[in-house]
Image 1: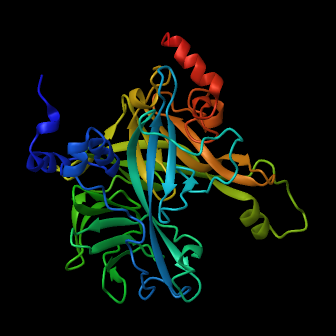
Image 2 (image 1 turned 30 degrees about the vertical axis):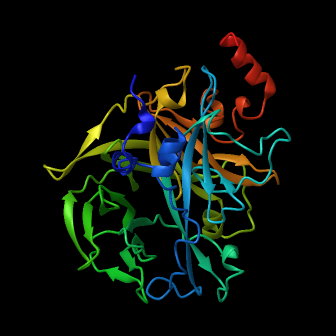
Image 3 (image 1 turned 90 degrees about the horizontal axis):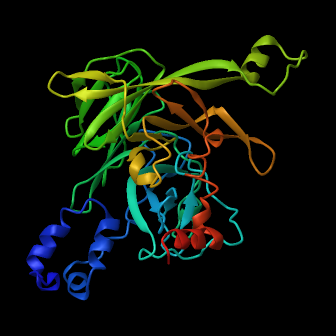
Length: 401
């Protein structure tokens, strides 16, 4: 049998260059001492990005703080149990923040038995994607106050690292135009192309792409600030979102309906326009999914996603295989998870808050994920195996341990 510990350091280094995520690098280094010595640990993302200027994008703050969050799938140590999907804010390595993977809200209340340590030897961790978020800095930034940045800039941010410590950002301006920032610049730069407001941006295969409200897809050249058509419009729904799915670029078309909120009542003392603005809300009613045909420069509709599940968050979008998430195979793919007012829930203070919805492409059904038992504990609260000794004992019994 071959002794893997004797592989040349040069070969180990070459292999490590093809590992897609920092989690894969950590697992690679844990094989043996020789591999750990040959491969340096992945660079920490904490404090990697400097304070960004507000000039050219916002006049309401001192600047921006760019943070990186990573979405993980934690797979249980025993079969027949579902994975747990989490998002971690790792800007401060001494204090990690656990976030809702889709709406980005911070989890502040934990079960009493919630573990303080997760071992990679007990569970398998897989990175599903990254999210970059811009936070307004509403005061003159100092070294001690940067972590107290204000509200999020509510548009998705695509980031390209150039390998020498520099980076380029692409996001959407409040006007609906695209806006670019390069590390070292003093201001953001608007791209004048504006046939229709842009809905989403993504870094795909090393290039920036953006889709507008009609489904028109463009490739963005951040050097000369020009765009070129990658796919013609599809029109249809109300909002277009981009997802990288196993190397293919998908466009998800979200259809919205403006409806009265169910439980807010009616106040005869308000004028009609005040009543309408106060008690109407947008709700998602269905989705359509399209795949990019690069050669034909067009979108092709997908009727069936097969085993794939799509996740659409406020500042991120990612995909996963149902077979990898649900080891018991009781839950299938061909569905979309999303955040929306459609799935209102009461938070701990009794107030209405956005929650997670589930859309089934085959049946067209849509509703709160909480009504689907198999999917309900993908996010929060976590599945029982995370903190329940009884669940662990049951798993050991099934494996005759």
